[in-house]
Length: 423
Image (tube, rainbow, N blue to C red):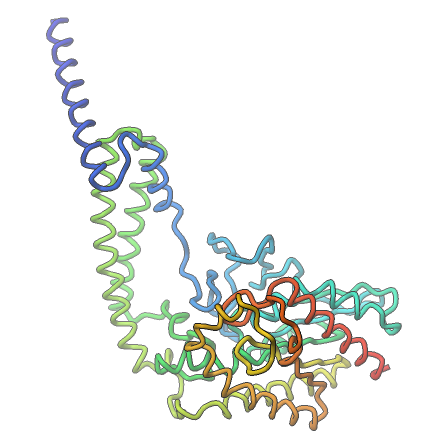
């Protein structure tokens, strides 16, 4: 009896060893190193961890907002990309400070409006801004408190609505700094018009509305979610049991995961196909279509101008100092002596350049009209005109710390001058 058990155990051990060796060989043909549990563990962990859908413009997990278009999702598991140690507040903005602040004798509240360039200014350029503004005798002894309402991809009237919405919630401001212009003349054409979405809607509006389905789509989405949960559930079991230590189990997981991915991809493709079809016909996703896609620049800049006028009117009625700045850009002619690195970055001008070259002269023209209407408007499009250092860090619009500090200082000086005039 004992010999039979030993013999059976030996046979089973041999079969297991054979399976392990064969599985290791098959895994190797699938680009997995021989007997490398850690390699498989990383692959499994990647499936388990997963990531939420992100906003194509901001690269962050975003959620629809009933008044602002979208904000970041404070409950998302996806880490905030490329934004250093900054955390999200409960209103969905990248700011450790909550946006609902109250005026007090010992503080001076400054709200920052705009897109991602304004957001970076409010962080990397804030010390330069504060250093200049704090020289004002009007706020001597007060702490300058920044409230960052800028968000990547925002364009007018989102700045206007963000200001009004947070004011309606009880937020109070002593000063509003609005830095914008680039998004208004580029993103509508790049993110919306090409998809037959109103250029006046938030950028990538169709992508943000993927959660609105009819009953048939809901069923398909349910199947997709079920498949994804099964995939993650099986992978979680592999991790918790450490079954990936076995080549046979790893091979079984690898092949099963491949089947899951094929089925998931098929369902996603079907949903995306229906979404694209619906996007061209659904008012929910496209908005009003009575716009001239070839000649919309004046309409876009007109919205930019009128939104600023509204912010100015509400600010004056509330005793707030409103300052509007036109941001500089890499593709704006004669706005900077470009370094070799910046020339290399600007080589992809096919995407941004044409829109900037058409839009920026209009922004300057309408900016002068804002001045004539009493708005404190400042054209910063040439702020780097004589600077040959590398300040731009990508082929879009963003600046390095030096660029933000230069801009922060200039804005701080104008803010201090405006306080002196107001006093």
